[in-house]
Amino acid sequence: MAQTSANGAGKGADPVQRDIDALSDQIAALRGDLSSLAELVGEIGQRRGKAAREALETRAQDLRGQGEEALRDAGRKVAEIEDGAAERIRATPFQAMGLAAAAGFLVGYLGARR
Image (cartoon, rainbow, N blue to C red; front, side, top):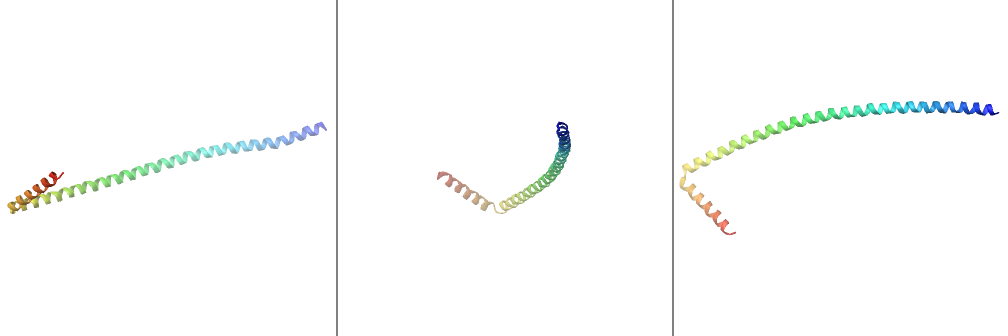
């Protein structure tokens, strides 16, 4: 009877050990899969980051170009206004002097009130 229980215990331990070995193999496979997934996600993140950086750099260059164009347009408009003011001053110098004097008195009055 001692032999049967020892043989029975030996046979019962064999399937348990096989299950443990199978689980260990599956856990090792899962670890490998998780490692591969982590590397893949990292590569995807790097690619998307690089693409986003390139898109932002392109957008920044476009905006810089638009800003420079707006600055040139503003400079042209200021030059046109300056030319127009100079022409008006030459056409009516006494009126320009009167406006300048009035503006000076107004600034002086407002400054003196403080």
